[in-house]
Length: 223
Image (cartoon, rainbow, N blue to C red):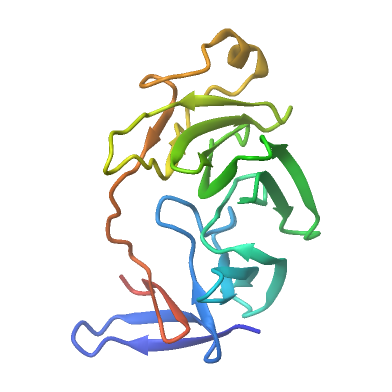
């Protein structure tokens, strides 16, 4: 399914551990999301990425043994994040789902309004109690906060960005101080501009990963 190879940079002498397939595109998660399992050995990648539909399969890859396991099929690439409870949280359509690394069982966390599309990547707090994600109604984007235990969701931020750049993206929950309990969620108003425990990323930065020729290259092994 996936293969690994070591590549030495001729200029720096550093060794790069690459994971991928010669026949298809393989990418890591978005740089604001975690692509690693909590054991720091297993890597979650988007494999067999279709460049036309941006659909893929999520694969758990063991960097020590080279073994791999399919977690989910026909899912959006770069839509999820790894969490400390050994689940991969991701969005499909108007749903937030979580797949168990051990059993590959998928459970539904939340379903939002039918006319709203969820746009990844999702973000999750350290205690795995709160997920944040972008909800989109045509060009109107909202930052949503989801209480994982109950599945309740709310609008945390309605940014109302002015045109020509009205789209918000990459909602990130505060990993340490999220609004996690359903009680506190009900006590707060539905729309925030600041102070909600969430932030938005509007500009991409460089990442230590790259993807080309079907291979995903990770941090150098002797960096």
